Length: 136
Image 1: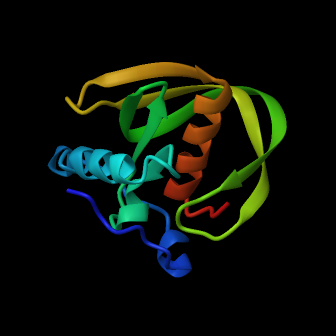
Image 2: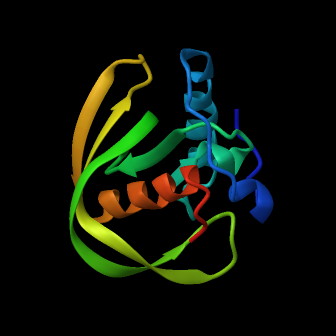
């Protein structure tokens, strides 16, 4: 179900709690909300739809990828990026990495690892920041 985007800075500044299998429904809510905002959005974290859980979604090409409890394992190639956010007004500068490797659980609660480069890596890092209460 499509959810309203949270813009409350105090709420967004909180560190998200680990997700459990009981939170699998968030995958559908995140997918629906991402699709509804497809003209201005390429990724979301669960706190952006009002749930303080460690769940993100982002577009990997045409495929939305949902990650439960993602963990950044490695990163390389730092650069400065300009980013916007549905929860905030304007664009901000931040440090990102060209290549990242993550571990996570998928929508079937299976453990996965993935290496991302370029724009998908940047999107994923932005959403990981949301899970830590870092607002870009």
